[in-house]
Image 1 (cartoon, rainbow, N blue to C red):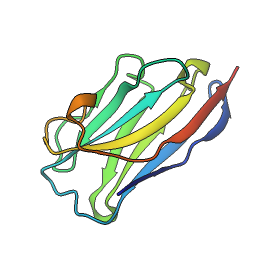
Image 2 (cartoon, rainbow, N blue to C red):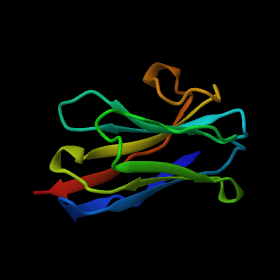
Image 3 (tube, one colour):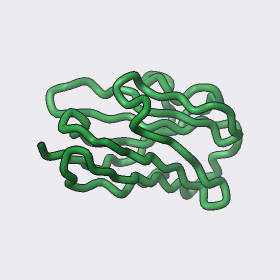
Image 4 (tube, one colour):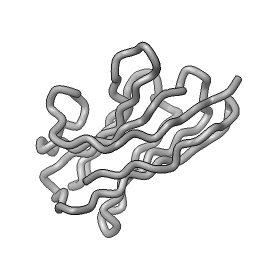
Length: 123
């Protein structure tokens, strides 16, 4: 089970940190963890991904330089630090797990989805 939290309302230029706690199963080093988001009337899009085993993180073009994905293996938790937020970042954010340790970036390859957390950025 994946549980995302940390969403809320923030003004443009502000920051939020989302957390994704994995429980009920062991998402071992063979998994990649990803964050996706879906704005009203739009398709779900890739935001960021990282492997439990390490390696470089990946980011969607629209968030590069502003968002940072990280993980705490001891807590089985993945984080998404969101800085310099823009109104267009408003969306429901989902964490996800991909059994491909180098994946986590393609919606069709995601094996587990968490419930989303709402992020609203006001102008």
